[in-house]
Every structure is written in C-alpha cells, then in structure tokens.
Image 1 (tube, rainbow, N blue to C red):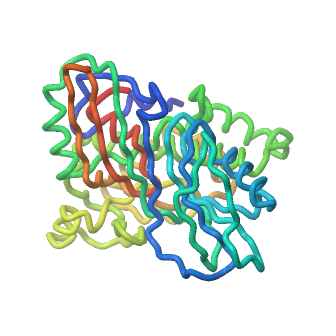
Image 2: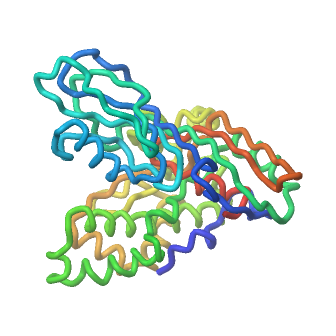
Length: 342
C-alpha cells in the first residue's frame, strides 16, 4: 500500500521545477465562496471572518466565547489552513436576537461581513475557494510551465486527493487497515477519526485508479464503459459513448466518474471497469476493510477545472505568483503538482 502523491501519473508529465509554499502566512491566501444569497432574516448570524495563525476549530471556540454560545451552535462549511491568511464563513445560532452582537477584532481574526439567514451553515455547502499564493525559491527549469498551464486551462487537472488526506506522516492508510480490522481498537475510535480513516482508504484507491487511467492515455476523452458525472449536480449516469457526450466532456459539462469504493453496483463496464478492477484486485485488503465497514460506493470526477488560473513567474525573486478558483473538494496542492513540485 502506498499513498505517495509523488508517484502518481500526471496527465502533462512531471514538473521540471520545484519551490516552497507557506513560507509566511501572507504567502497563502484563501477566500471561501458560498454561492448562495442570504435571506436577511432568521436566527443564524453568518460571519465572514479573516483569520491568521488559527485553525477553524480554534476560531470557532473564540467566536463562541465572544457571542456566549456553545461551539456546537456555530456552523462552518470547510476547514481552512492555520498557517495562512484565510477568509471563511461561520454561522452562529442566536435565537431571539435582533441586534448583531459586537465582536472586537483581534490580531488573529477580523469580522469582514455579517448577515442573518434562516439555516445553519453545514459542512461542504460552499461553492469554491479562491487562492492567492506565492511559491518561493523556485529552482529547475520553468520552460514547460506555460504550456502545462495552457493544457490545464483547456483540459483540466487530475482530481487526485491531496496528501492532507493521508495524515502528517502519510500513514493513515496503514493505520486504517490495522485499526479498523481490530474489533476492540475500532470500537474506541471517535466518529471523526473513523471517518478520516475510511476517507483515506477510499482516496488511496481513487488516486491509484485515476493514475492508471492516465498511464493508459485516458484523459482528454472519456473511455467506453465510463460513468458520466454532471459537473454541477455531480449526479451520475451511464450511456453508450457518443459524439455528443464527448463534446459535453470537452466543454466541462460532464466528467468521467471514478469509484470511491464501497458496496453496491459498479455501473462501469468494458475498459473503464477493467482498469478499476486491476487496482481493486491488487488492494484486496483495503477493499475488504471498506466492505466490512458497510461503506457504499459513490463516485468522484476524474478531473477538475482551474478557474481564472493565472501563473506569473518572477525570475529576479525566484518566485511564482498564482491566482486560481477551485470548486470545493479539489486540492490546490494537486493542481500545483502538475507544473511545480512543492
């Protein structure tokens, strides 16, 4: 079992340059985009908060103290980096409150916006994240960066799960198999830890399948037997491959779906099924662990779009400045690894 993201096959070849990210919080800026409008009324106060040097959970604890509510009454959509300057939405449940409470800004967080809404903010409902980052100490050749960025804009980038899924020591897969298959240790797991382990196992299989498809040259077009995934709703359907479907793929209206393994019908056939089965058969222990946990199969798109991607290289400072917007669930580090090793 291996989850070393450097061993994955990337669609445009290996990057020829490398650099360092997050050398200071200001080098890594993230802005969360919700994608829906507020009702202007209700008992949930939505706060758009800029934070530096705090995890999302630390921020929630501080906001809970300021507003006098329990942390469980505060909702968030996604976790944001600690060592970065990030903007994200929180919702604070304040039943019966008519006036927005005063929350004093600190060095670590500032309230940028506030709006009333009728529903709590739930995990995963945001639309996208906008990034502004600086990669320092660029070394190696940057000759291929421009052409690779052009390819990413035309064809997208491989939607691999990032190394965050596999733990600080990159050993979540090994831990998951060992602990989940031990009845006594599994019972002692918290719900959060168990979820992290299951996600790591499914992510490992997904990455291997996606990488093998790219190795077989399956990237710019879908393949016979694919499951198609709608770009917006992420719902899936299976149809014989046609010129119309290929055109929709070219226009980013649909993607090829890759299994997040679990019980249930594969829905794939022909070459697509053969590739997945090759990976699954060589990872039987992971598969059986997931089946034992009664995880149901779902799908993840094989690629992601890099919206408004702008990459500027500054040779005098040996820096690369990057702006991009990514849909939720896509990893910035995965995008970067297509053209610069970090």
